[in-house]
Length: 559
Image 1 (cartoon, rainbow, N blue to C red):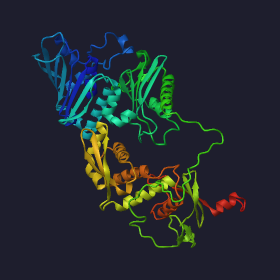
Image 2: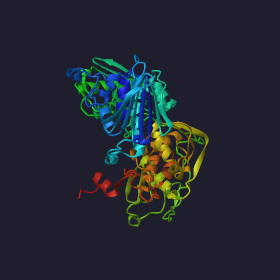
Image 3: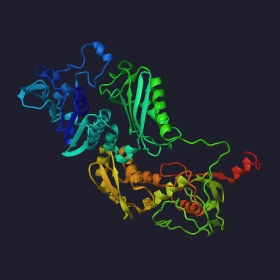
Image 4: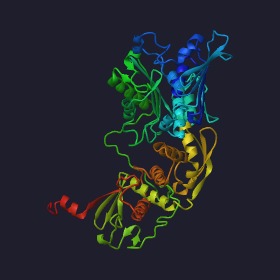
């Protein structure tokens, strides 16, 4: 309903659109615009099925220039609610008020009103209560409304949008024509400043908008927004084109932020595919896919050039002089093996195992005591056990260590690290609303976060276990997790949330570790209850048995 009413306002040439929502839309949806208005004699036709002023012939269906064109939206709303429309054209001295209940007109007359149109939809499904059970939760409906308003604010930056939900201003733009300012209202000034501009003009296709640099990414594709001729669209193929443009530049499982606008001849795109008009069909889909990918990649390379490497040139980590301190290992906040007493099965001298352990003494799910050997490609640790060679993924292993240390503290008072300087984080309205609802749960997990204005939060403390992590990044990880599951966090979901935060806080592939750091990681991994996989199920290690090595070197025949 909000989408259709906004589209009507934009088709009417509105420069200001105000939306008021109460009861997640069930009690009230009101949209006011300053557009051209509806002539008094045509107002009753506005709620008649298939009556539209936007098409004059069937041929117009192949050249649609307006957002709406079917003439079904207002009629459908009027049939399931108490609908009021007040409209006044610029050339009229007074406005006209139309009142409809459950599809029946109960009032029509003149009224004083400013130029433009007001549509008020009240008591949704009052005559069809069974339909209410098909609605999503109130929180979900509110977020979807915010998402709709944000989409059109991006597509029409010269229009001033104002959204008020449950008596509180939720979103507002200035309407000065700057898309970057709209991005600032959505994501905050810092993210808007980092976004890279895309401008590409081609044969029958223009691409414009903004994309994120490789340093800014999300864990899902939800922040890739596409528009065709000013209309928000959902197209998995074009979304894949944007993702492919970042190929080899982002980690696996990370996705860019993008707001991209495609302008093409109306006869080359069919918007009459689905009632929501969100799905479209392109006449030259392959060419558009290729052009979009090329435009995004070209803009990315222009703003973030990747230097080439000559033949034979290899990167080596800089040497660390004796006595020089370097910070490469996040502070873990608690002592190793806290809450996990272990029986001594051997002695270590400078990290070297000096007492043998028989394989029969090992836990099935555990690992033997390992002798540190070294590090490969600043990504994998090499260790020797009594039954062969072990290759350990340092990132996955550190994830497991952090996760089990964090989970061992859950249920008790998780210690927090107060920040010397509180961090301010601004989020899109829908993410901010979701985060605000979960603040009590976050407090139990060791986060101290306060509301600091519309869609803005103040991070005062984070769990001591994650004290080496950027507070803003930690908060974004939490929001991404919430968005993947709309239900409130519960016990199992808290564990999933902790796993996601630990993934971001763990040491990364390509990060050189000192010998002491490598030995400490091995020691802590040995103490874990489930050391062979990370919390997400990925293996932390590969075991090459002595028997396998002997067969590979031809010392023993294949059996």
